[in-house]
Image (cartoon, rainbow, N blue to C red; front, side):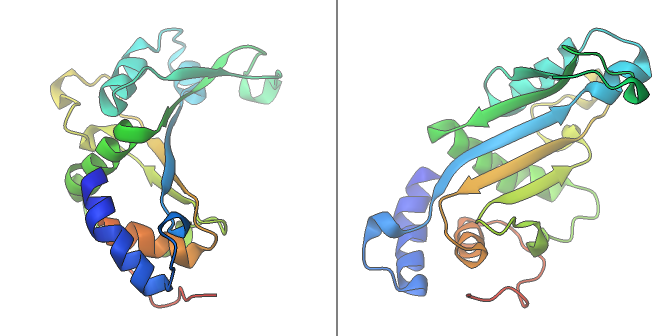
Length: 185
């Protein structure tokens, strides 16, 4: 994916965005994968979430960091210091490997997949994808899955606008559903 980016995507973006300097071309900075485990722990009355850590480790290729709650909220049965989420920040070669796997293998395995929404850009060139089933990734053996859970993928770029980020992701191969209402501002 890194070679594809340097050989194909950079020249296309330079031409499309009329950029002269190669260092001004938008690129991926990091990919963050998050899983919320707070409701999993309260719903099942479990304290063990090792299977979710193992799944995220297989999906991303690195060990996730456990995020803990900062304050207690009684309505949600949440105590201070309870684990509420897992996160992995991917950079460098792992980021490109994960992005390639996401585009070419995982997204086509989603049931009734029509394409990604353009409205998921945040206004600063970052894109968010919510996935309902983690079993779309090839590393997950469906026969060994105890509970199916979702995950959130945030793709951060150094693009200044959503249009630049959209072109970057489109040229990298992300399957977008519609692109008519997104214009260069």
